[in-house]
Length: 141
Image (tube, rainbow, N blue to C red):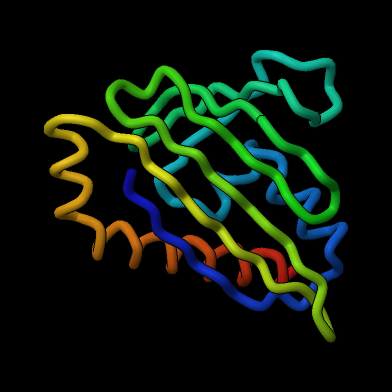
């Protein structure tokens, strides 16, 4: 298992940040590896069991496996080949906004596990940039 984490302060209410990051269709605006996302399973309300079809650098599905508004949403990747990501997004209210954390666990075996482990520094820096992109998008309004 490979994991990495990035945290930033966002000067917005927890409910607003949560609503934005819980909907993977918004990821393309801040997570530059995501080109598009559509809901393929769910009744229109985001909840545990909602599944998104994600297109981008790595394409596949992401299912909401935990949904605790406005503090935590967890996505489990599927149909992504030998990499199975778990994307944990937490929102903690603090004075003047929230502390947002994106923690990713990658279950990657064989060659992909070896390769991803070798690229951990690059992947971590990219995650840092994605989280800063999110901050900029949300604070611009």
